[in-house]
Image (tube, rainbow, N blue to C red; front, side, top):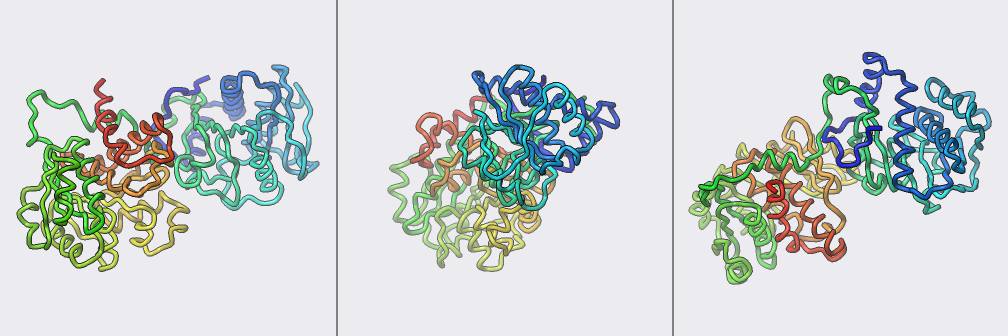
Length: 506
């Protein structure tokens, strides 16, 4: 089979787009639907044997749709290998009578070759060492109810490993939202097109390791279908940051000015400035409060630190800068407002984060009327304020939210969080790197410095944002691999950032 065990494809699709891909393969390329179902079942079984080489007993949980049909194929293959197989079907005693199409055909093949199943009832024992989730597929829209909900809760309470077929049951394939309740899988094998909802919001706690199989459909099947979003990968980093000329000098890689670090918050702006240097900016200046100058010079003498106590002191610094980052540690007092007004008046390429966004919201600054080359990097709380909605409403569909944010703010928008999204007016980009260790103050300041540095080096706002998010998350994964997630500090990432960037040249 064509299971890709090395890397996932970059394109991501909605549930409807994957259904179109499936119909195209069947109708235009004459691949019978049952053949695709058989390939899916073979792919799942092959992965189970590889991931659980000593497995002897499976429990396969099947619904009444095509997802259940995939499960019937797995059951038949497992029984043919003389594994012990418990098949549990949801739908009552007349379950089989309601099956249609390919699912019915797969059921008939199972019953002819290796019959035996039981109807689900609350409290049924899940006997297998591994549970195979083939209950609900990508067509689910409303909350899970009835026996399906009861069984999903029982699956999760069993603490047994789960292998999800195409998508964990109960998860929205488009948004990653849990629809009432959802299976928590150790592995999820997605077919034909990667579902975009697998990689963001609540899905990151449900999918486990995501695998992919194209079911051997021809490449031409994908050509007419628009891509909903793209995962950012090493290849994107390689394309956006080619090797430097041997004749390089600091003037070729931009001068970034960081404005921030109000009283008691000097570390945030310094983290931003240092991250910018680690990301390749040629020159980095920091405009901050007088009391932070000495500490900044001690921490990172490569940053040119300037004491700025009023907006009137900024114009000379702004004139020398190619790109400005404002927001980290900025605060929301009169000093912060002066800084923001001066920065906006400069009309330079700009990244706005943290309190810069909060000040804009408080003063009616959205829709944002900044310079043409802008990046804004809100976390969900800041994004909800910009859109005048609740965080829960925003998180219910992050893809729709980032598109709304872009229309409101212009430029490139980074919606931070699990499965961070970037949108600059056309397609969205998703970063599936990163880990829970990043849940600590200062991580966003680091991201601002990385993205600002890339913007200063000539990348477009879209590329600076999506590549910056990827570098940031990948550096965090490197730290986690060495030390674990809990206790990770933003400053731990600083020494990893150059390694992430430079590894593409190795």
